[in-house]
Image 1 (cartoon, rainbow, N blue to C red):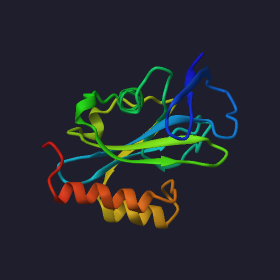
Image 2 (cartoon, one colour; image 1 turned 135 degrees about the vertical axis):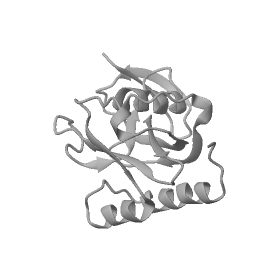
Image 3 (cartoon, rainbow, N blue to C red; image 1 turned 60 degrees about the vertical axis):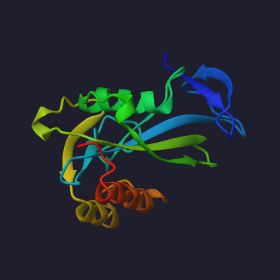
Length: 174
């Protein structure tokens, strides 16, 4: 059974609970999202498996809930490894933003980006989670969002802007 650390709005630890817990008001658990980018500035997206209980068959980024005892950066690296077979050192992640969801999800999302040097053919996709992966340039990414082909959330375009600014200012480690 998987366990989550339950925290307050400031990320302070409250207790550990089974992953199927329904958080109370003022309680949250961590999640992470990773924006993998290649040297051409393309973003690696993945189509979720039809077997996924959340957003089946939908294109999106690498995301996941953080297990008890992990930092969000460690969880982000784990998700890249589990879902795509990518091994990335934690210190290569670039933190972009923390988003607190004060809704029924009770999530504190930490958003990261990382440079990746991988061909789609070299990915080892976890078929229960990922059906397909694709490198897309930012204009195509944005068009997929506008067409409803890629999972959207309120801060998505802001995160895309941060990622493309990092590429332009060469903050990525190539």
